[in-house]
Image (cartoon, rainbow, N blue to C red; front, side):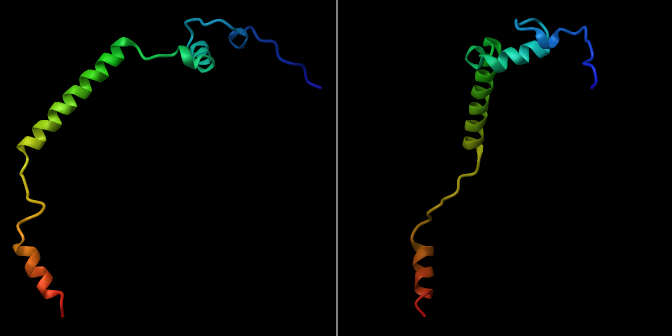
Length: 84
């Protein structure tokens, strides 16, 4: 039977949240209700959404307008040809 190797690392024994990335990932996984995005990130995303909406409106207004349902001329001639 082999002996268990002694280690000096206490990373796996840590139960409190420290500045270490591994500890933070564990804390975040254990406490999902306390994890919220930062105010800076939320503000940045709100600003991006506003800009995206403005750009979309500009595209829609500058785009070419097409008539989806043209006047009845084309449809009535199409119906006459189907009665064969």
